[in-house]
Length: 611
Image (tube, rainbow, N blue to C red; front, side, top):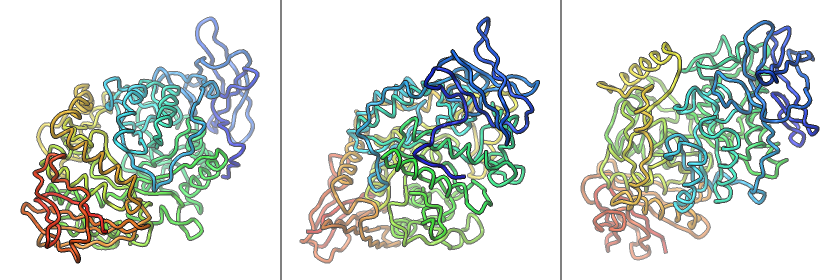
């Protein structure tokens, strides 16, 4: 399906026309007749839509404007919300509301987005980021993120989900920003405010499955596939009968966010779970459509795949058989660093251990790049060492790696402060695009747990049992916080007071200084530097050399519990830049240059500039 970027606008759903009338359009090949019920009480109106072929029904009604609620009635069935609702103020079981996107007054006309190489991403969950738990609550704290030095905010999914407590991956109304967060205008205010602070906005979208509660799409058409299943249920019908309109539903959704909400990028959840056997994969079509629309809008938009496939084709050129996305997550970096710092070896951590995987992740993008995976009991992945470094997003914490632990422990409670600082240096001195998880920068100790607020008792019990089964594979037993419990959600909120206290403030100072260096040093710009990595498994150290445009840096990382000295060819031709063992960051000040090389305190990192 091809989009003409210059003329694209959302044609399905309820659209307010220049004369104040509203045009309704819905794809419903399962129905013979579709009626729209508008308003309630004495002022309620009914409009019978006209079929136009291919399962499409449409019609217009005068004298409505924005703000009215409406439902669809399919044949003689019950009232249902619009599959392309822009707003669901009463939640997933309530009506749709008409919204006029042109009524919002944007102030970001001078904003044009970021390239992947400029990204320093801060992932956050709206509901637990601030006491307010809303889009406006995030706005109040944007100056803190600007001062920290990140360049982009990645927002976990906001498509309308059941209740008010959810990670967002159970969304069922993909076009409707979560009502309890502030709805569509609340999200527009947030994006506009981010741009005013010089921050790009990346929205996490879920195109691999839909949530189980409030999903009325099957009543309208064959949106899901009987042949393709994901870890979370049926996948989308991307390659079967009637799949053209299903694909359009997802493609339009992506263009909707960047056009009506000015977002600068999309993070595609579990993109490797989007099964599509078509000649043109949905992700390839999505990349082409987004690129066209971004060009038409005069903005830079990035598409980032979350993928555990270790497959460089996600970011490969479409002319050479790739999908053409801008970047992808690489979990291997997280796993390698996590195991090196914590010593954990359960589950998929079994593929890692020692410092060699850390060195390989720094040098070669993937650790599992075709080698045998003990966890999977087969060879896994594909080499990607020749793919530019700015095509990879790495982290040492994120919502999954924290929240999918039985008790949601952050790295700050799993390791000591020295190891926490070492992890920060590994992330922010790596040659890749870094991603921080909210609170990481000051060592938040509140957990980030999995939470929901479903209304279906059977579903609630299924979620509880499913979490127990997942945790058993990792050997986590004992009491597990109830996902449905309000206290589980409340206990996952950030405590911002900590960021100003003791070692928390000192850790934030380290993150701030490291991020500032990423702004200043050409060698730390992803995709720009030549990379050289060395390591010693026996002595537990890794060194990383980066050179680009007259900037030459050497970073040393000591994972051991004893002091180490890394030999340098010419110690006198280097200048110390930063050490995680510095007093400013809560260390003991023992690391530094000596006549024999770079001395590294236990569990520390240091950065040198080559003169």
